[in-house]
Structure formats: structure tokens, C-alpha cells
Image (cartoon, rainbow, N blue to C red; front, top):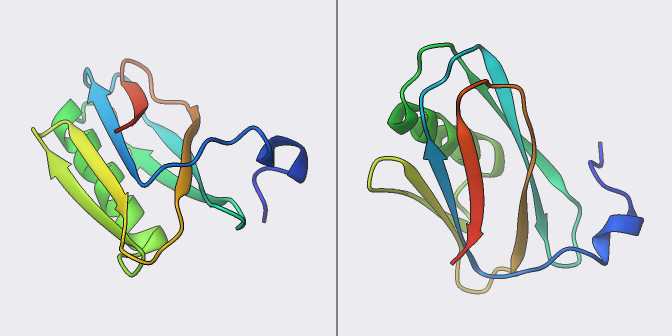
Length: 116
């Protein structure tokens, strides 16, 4: 299923390198959802289930695991940095990407997506 229609596709900004930073611990169960769109491609949702009490570093770890499982590592390098950051870079030859935080129902945790 497509997360965004063509109306929003024109508003997306693309780059080759993103950093997802996580702050604070999870105060509730919930789900964090990202939208990843390769330039000219279809948006893919990446859903991350988080359990209450998960530390910020472990939330970042769950985000990394979800990206590896759901988008794979063929076109992307997905790494941890400083415990609470996840770095997502496109591989050589792959298209630039847009990455957005679509939603989060996890209380306490702040998740920010930065273009590096």
C-alpha cells in the first residue's frame, strides 16, 4: 500500500544520507512509523514496535533492526552511531531518498530525522 499519494511527492526533499536521533526512554508501548521514498519511486512504510521501558539506545537499535528487516541492505547502508543514532545512507548507484517520521504512538521518546 502506498503511504503517500502523488500530491505529497512533490514536497519531498531527497538526499543520500539521513540520521535518526532518539532521545528519552519509552514510557508506553507503541509504534514508530517512517516513510522512505526513493527518488521517483514508491513510499515504503517502515514500522517499528516499541515496548514500554525500552531505553533510548535500545529504541534506536529496534529502529535499525526494522530498517534492515523491512528495506534491506542492498540499496542502503544502515548503521548505529553513538548508541542513540541510526544512520541510513543510500549505496553507490542507488537513488537518493526521502525519509520522514510519519507517526509515533510511543510516549516519552523523541525521534528526529536529520538530513546529514
